[in-house]
Image (tube, rainbow, N blue to C red; front, side):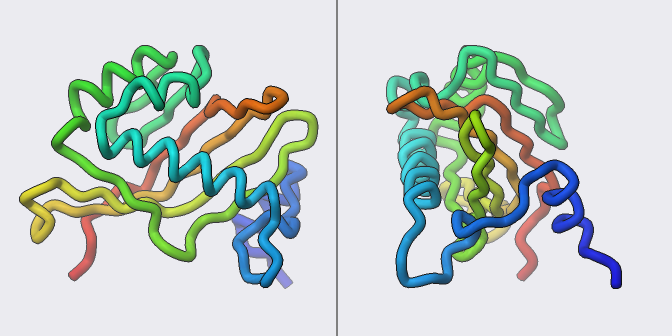
Amino acid sequence: MKSPPAVLFLFLFGLAPSSAGAQSSPTPDPLYQTIQSLDTKLFDAYNHCDLTTIAPLVSEDLEFYHDKTGLARGRQSLLDGIRNNICGKVSRELVPGTLQVYPIAHYGAVEIGTHRFHHPGREHDDAGEAQFIMLWQNKGEDWQLTRVISFDHRPLTK
């Protein structure tokens, strides 16, 4: 019996699913709640062009891989990109039911999901979705986003 590629990838790289994965149990997992809260905080700030809130959530040595624009390195590059290309032009929402969270031993967590982008005033013809993987590093009480992969950008099907 063949394993699905995603499951095989997770096991090969030591990311076997745990109770921190997609939430279906009545008792919320603390790691899942933490990452979900960080995602909400990050993208609420993203949607409102609040770069002051975003900056401490992002590592100075961030690597952001995007299937359409390539690799961007560094916190300042991300902040500049948001300021110049996102503010007032794009909003992001997490597609309900797609968030998955997995622990990374001695580091933090990986967040996987689907996000939907909207362009204010043009929702009817310019919305899209993409998959994402975000690596969060736990630094004591603080968490920082260190790596992002955003891929499979596509228009919403009607």
